[in-house]
Length: 363
Image (tube, rainbow, N blue to C red; front, side, top):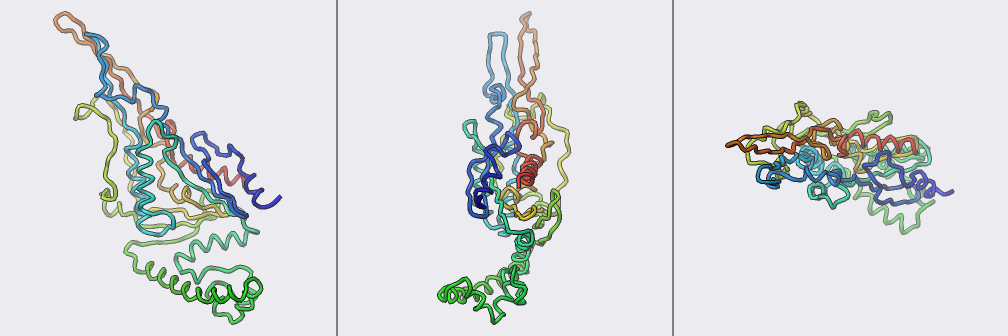
């Protein structure tokens, strides 16, 4: 069985541990598999009564009417998540996460109506190495390259030649003979042209890090029981509570006549304390595998499953009666019911971590 086949077979068709996520596609190479996954839009299952608001009030008869108070959907309360991702994009610290990409994701999430199957798409990369030492070196390079430069990237298998990293490699006079075992003369010449450029890029990276106004820290610690590289940046929202200039606030709120809807009871859960720093997961090592990708980078910004939202399926009826000139008038109020993200099937941090744990078990 070749490496590609074994990696593919590690992930059967229905490998995801939750019915709220689906695999969209996969790309296989000899030692790596990239899984694209999508979160199913829970608002597809919203009952008709909750899709209506006060603009849809009905007169059942001359003496009876129905008033729809509407609900607050989660789409309108994801501003914190997308602003956190925007800060990461603006920092330029994670390749592949750009402001345009975050804005596209936010637009996709906001516009995911009943006909849209997914409200969020993400990816996971699983790379297999020959042994744990190689995997550990790859994990360390995620931190070293960013904080110390490309020239400090570790090179395994060259210790006997007193070569620990790319910088040592170029200083070692034997590098041509080392390369000659695997590269042609033309390839070596091309490599020599690129070498000074790598050094220049490395110096620029270090200069950018030194001149940053916000503090950036790369470090390694355990996460979900495995060795993980993290990036920590200052939370601009902690300094400036209002960073909504990045995005316009087009939140969908409970619709009504304009004032506070006294019939609708909101959650009494306290607002989470704003953290001074944001922690972003770059990659983790499980045996001789390295796991990385967009899902891992975003997971710390995901809301927790116990966060408040309105139920998408349940509602309450409140009946009011008025007697005017001997005639009884009846009003039926359709009211929302408080719930949580996990109960309603919205994406959340705990569910994403269950996906990671399932991957750990599979590999």
